[in-house]
Length: 82
Image (cartoon, rainbow, N blue to C red):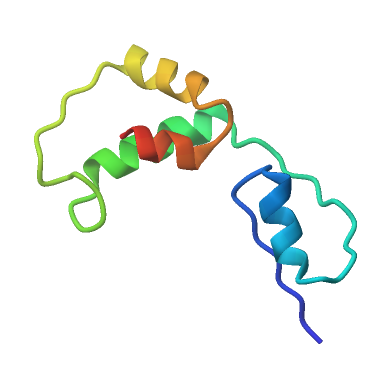
């Protein structure tokens, strides 16, 4: 049997939904590093197929760093803000 669990949130309500009625131990959810969020933002800005690469977006490195900091380890929050 293979059990695959994926999560993008620390919301306990969503974690309970994943359990599907089965008691499960809490799984640790780790924040994404600011470095990885910064790379994600740049990739989304430059990706012509799945991102905004067809637009001319000019953003200061300091702005991206602040953005990554304010995202508080949540890559989804960073992409939503983009």
